[in-house]
Length: 269
Length: 243
Ligand SMILES: Nc1ncnc2c1ncn2[C@@H]1O[C@H](COP(=O)(O)OP(=O)(O)OP(=O)(O)O)[C@@H](O)[C@H]1O
Ligand SMILES: [Mg+2]
Image (cartoon, protein in one colour):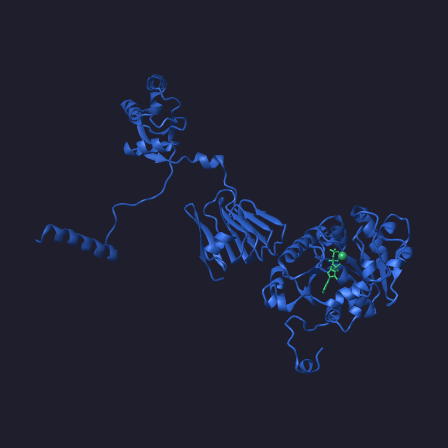
């Protein structure tokens, strides 16, 4: 059974694309055939983060419009042979996505993939609605601040009313919280909401907490999903999240302020 | 023989003892019953016209009226200076027995009371506006930003939280078994007895029958935990509850 996962947030710039790339890569590394789709038509950047921007010939909209077949548009990841990318069009607008067209492409993909990751654009317009419509599971990406939490709450409401599962009265879309750009020291100083605060407000299960990390920017600049950097805290946190997605139970890391340990004090960083 | 005060006291004690011992049968008993009464509708204020018309009616069918208990409906008389006493005199002079008045404006009700007439509520009113059975709407989930829930004609019970940017509205009361962060409007159709009860109040707005408080009013009042918000006259109050 194929699982369709939307990475969504409402608010922009919270880390959806970073998370889509990391989680798709993580699932493929665990041996699952995975495709990640960029729904951000007109503002595509998943291909940059995946490091395949030079190999884009056809895109998602071409496939919907029948201008290319699926296998012409799918880009095979160069590091991981179970991973494929379906890039967005840079020249169309978000209304190029129709419910029927998206449904058709997703059912074709379901024939060959175990996981379909949909990287949603920000907002609650057509692009975001199309990305979440067919989802079985939603990874609600949220930064620990009030406006992001509010927008995530709005998106959860949409998942519960505007998704295919809601419209057809099926089992509801499963919602999981991914808290990104988490900085424990800024929580202690009261500038940011804590994990507990956000969990309490959104009232959905926690999938992972990704710390604010320099390594994310470095990774996206070099076109390598941060999960491949297992030296970095963010990379490790994404690996944990993927393991939890696959049913493992792991403790949450990087949620309290780091105390400089004995060895670190002696040897430095 | 004691003083008069003592006698009064003795009688009271006697009464008390007898009633306690069950030897006392009361000489009064109040029971409800309903009767059909004729209603005389007064449609004009002019006493001469009324007198003439009444005499006409009595001439045609005196047996219908004389000695029969009558209720006067003065729904159409809106003049607070209308003289009920003259009307009463007119009717009694024609041997009509006036039991009371109905559908009067407040000033005329007062006049009627001073004249020793009963003010009777007409049963007709409830036929005009049949009371719909009260229904309760129960929602077993958290209400998210942008969602709006309305319980028409009854209470609203939310088993979950109400997020910032969400709105819950009820014609009756609102109960939130979770944190109320959004807006809650109870008594939306004007019911001043409606209340808002929440496990934790961090609301953007609470209102009852149009009287409202914003976050800052709640904070000034010290309402942050479980509370029952209600109207005391025209003024909102919040009682802390430990839920
Ligand atoms: N854990 C993190 N630590 C530091 N920076 C991060 C982290 N996650 C994301 N960022 C940075 O935040 C910015 C936005 O990230 P990203 O593009 O993944 O967000 P998005 O939600 O996809 O944005 P959009 O809504 O525009 O699609 C990028 O510059 C990225 O490098
Ligand atoms: Mg993005």
